[in-house]
Length: 310
Ligand code: TMO
Figure 1 (cartoon, protein in one colour):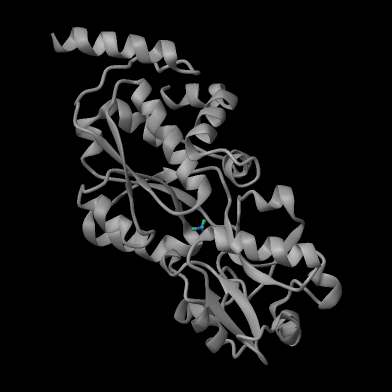
Figure 2 (cartoon, rainbow, N blue to C red; figure 1 turned 180 degrees about the horizontal axis):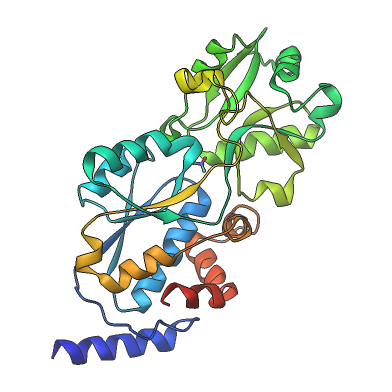
């Protein structure tokens, strides 16, 4: 009975999907697999891509929003099951703590090489000689001042839940800046667009892979490199984020036993920089919804998805 229902269900799904559903389709459990969603575009699109692929295999999928720092303990506890984008620069500490103390499973690294750092559009280099060195930026702090921050320069920082407190870095390095956190990613891009339109100086939080690199030329600011400067170990606030950071997946330890087919896919999911940038571009430049972008990404990456079930 159940077998028949599943077979019928996956036949309908397979017919309606834009990609080849993996051939071992048959969910080991009807309980929902809960995929974590965070508040930046590539994560929203790519978690939906994974969800659609799992649904195509017959699994029941739900999505749960979570804070980028608190999510790892929640996944370890089994309240949520899989996170597709854990970034070294902003999440390493929370991720590694949950692995060490709570039994979070490190589900492997993507091919993508990541960076999360202060960033300026290219034209700022003409107004501030010596970039991308952070000391050169600091010498020009005044050109970034606003009514809110003057005489200090304004750094447009990320939402607080991305795990970065740049006031601490500004303090540790005695910079002439004031870090102002935005509430959501969309505000970063609105600030950037407004500055670019008038060629006004701006320094803001950005990351790669992201859609920005296809839209606005610019550069990350080089702070002391944590891979080279010994003091960074004792006081990370004296240093930048990793310049070549990892991007990992995080999983609940019960997945392997409860949903072996899904677990295989999750372990095989592996994005490179261009695939992640493309996911964000579909929404932030092309204006698609998360759903539309996930469908388009799936249609554009059939061969990649086929490798996930191998
Ligand atoms: C966590 N993020 C990729 C937005 O820096």
